Image (tube, rainbow, N blue to C red; front, side, top):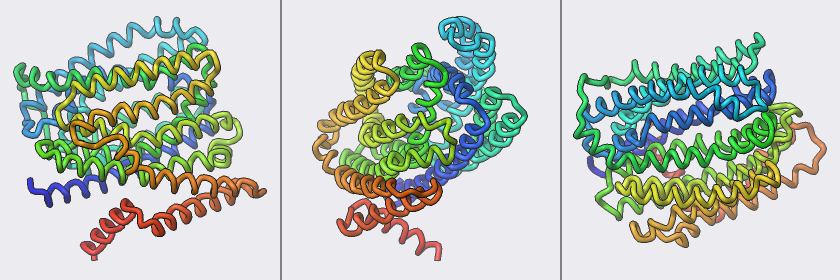
Length: 486
């Protein structure tokens, strides 16, 4: 594939992934607001806890092998079929383990309703089987860069889950409305992808192919497991030492910045990993793509996250009502901590694309040991300090992930810091401009409208005045796209 064709596929991929993530996050956000108004924080606390165990099983099913399929430039149907059958078999084993461990998990978290927790674990655990099917489908779509398929599959799953979840919440099903929404969303997305993607598994399993893929994938798998355990460790600790309401406030505060990071960062990450994998033989091209990805990601994500922190109080009060105001602090801290995500994630994507899964595993071990120490040092001081430990951990993680690319690609942390400094400075100025408006005695709707407008104007004007490189780059792509449409 020549450079122009790859560039067109990449731009198209970013467009469709952004459309998928953007529309999907908006739909999901609306659903979450409706359900948050209908349900209690304790209901969300139960789902947050159970999700930790289901997500862990999901990662065990995928085992890093989906990433291997994307990273392999010449993956064929035999590779995809082999991983499909392995993942499906693993999913049934893991669901059985989760089913039988449910009573022991419920006994450990004794502050929760035991019978309810057991039932929720066993029902939500069904998603593990769905994940097995969906992971290989998704890997095939990513490998062939058919990102438009993701748009329709996720949109279909979200709309169907919205209808089911809201109807059940209105009928008083409580936590089961969230369980149903969780399962229907995953199953709906899987079914749409199944019927829209031409790939089907063949009746073949190659042990040789499996070993080759696993030699790369097991390190990614181990790194993913460590990352999942670490990311969910805060939820496990809060769920154990505090209560369901505290866990719900923490997770709800986290959900807002996750929407932003998932919408913008997720779209860019999903496309640029297969793109970098296709040019893995040219370090010069890899470096160019990595720098561009970090700059563009930071340019968009930083003002959105900083702006979210600036408008947190009126936003939560308006959308979720006063009962959710305790989540404001967590929303603000976690939003700022996610600002460092582009440096951490994009550097890791480049290392994976180079085939250095050994480095990925080493980095994950170092980061999570440091992060775990921070968490347990914070536990005696309350949930707020646990949230602050996430901010400190993310700053350190970005520096740790950036270090190997100093030698691999000649991209030092200092150069990376200088690349992301302009949007960080502009976002800081924007933050104070938006916060000043808080002194006005206005309704939440009017206040939010003025704050959002002010933030947008300030950031765009600074981009124009400073002739920001990412602003000019994105503007040129938009103009080129519009010319083709005319």
